[in-house]
Length: 136
Image (cartoon, rainbow, N blue to C red):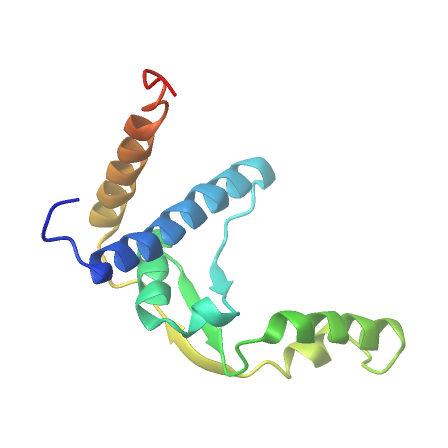
């Protein structure tokens, strides 16, 4: 940070950090499961941020879908109850109810996305234990 750092810089760094963390988690999941993630379906208030979802798509190298209904997480629980009670006959019927607002596709070259992610991992590594020599 410098004297020229603004609130916008800090917000952008936080949003980018979310995407880098998601990539770390997804890469671990893929290694553990042997299953490649082909797309992401986002929801919640953060999914209203188009910059976040586009950067996530770029860093992950997969499409990211934003639903028309941002608060679909709670709705998912209701869908499960409806499925269990026979209100809906199948998961396919429930999937047909999901309406997509926008799909974000990767636009960044993989080499650049990898370089950004590697720089972020290096920055995180350098920040570890930085307070160990400070006495209280």
